[in-house]
Image (cartoon, each protein chain N blue to C red):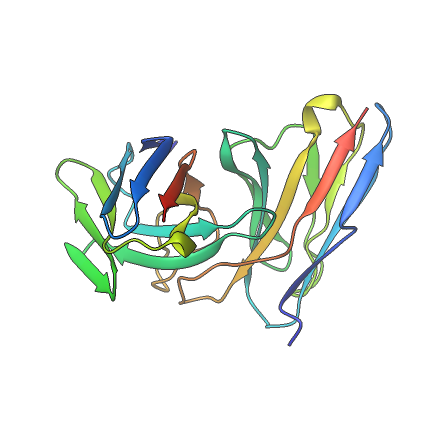
Length: 117
Length: 112
């Protein structure tokens, strides 16, 4: 089955710096890669995702890159702010023939990001 | 819409007791999933369902049963609780043809 490795487990940056979190996956059939943000005591929330037919996707200060050959993908957060402090999870899954996720995400173990003012 | 709801929010069980964690969604989503979250382990998939009457195992299915008799509900049953099942349990749902999974608020379960 799929296995997702995530690094680093903790990351501390100064406000305004960039943060990069990296994930690798094992199943070459995986084609959907979301990133979730989880604040303390709250539910995970989707912040950005990428599908295998795209190499990079941006949404304001957040970007995700995907290298299918190497089976790794990364989250980039620029101009970090204290409110970016949270645990971030990457995940992978195989979409079905309807084109969407079928609810069977395999997650990495998470990265605790701390942004110091 | 209430979205994805889970009950109870907190539960304490004794070893060997059984219970059902409830999950419901009012968005008419076809897909529903159960995850458990332990410190340092991320979220691990327990079971998932692609529609009423159809369920499949995830990464850590042992000790848990599920059924999906309606589109709205996806209960998770612990037949004989063990301390290793102490965790936070999240239910999630998504629409067929879409990508985003919507998570419920979670149930914090402690087994003593």
